Amino acid sequence: MRPHETTGMTDNEREAAALLEQALAKIAQGTGARRRVRQHIESALKCLRDPRESIPPSELNSANDG
Image (cartoon, rainbow, N blue to C red):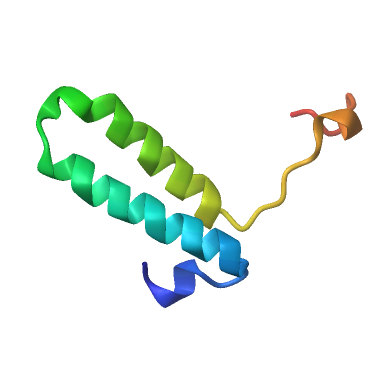
């Protein structure tokens, strides 16, 4: 993981991202049959690296749901 990708992440988030990257590397060594698994891991990494905060479902309303 590049240093700028960890900015703003907690220690736990950095550790989770590192584990996901290791899993992605192991899956990539296998056959193409695990394409969906690889896509899910990539999506999880993307979510961890996204600095934006989300709005909890309990706080959604017509003004902020879009």
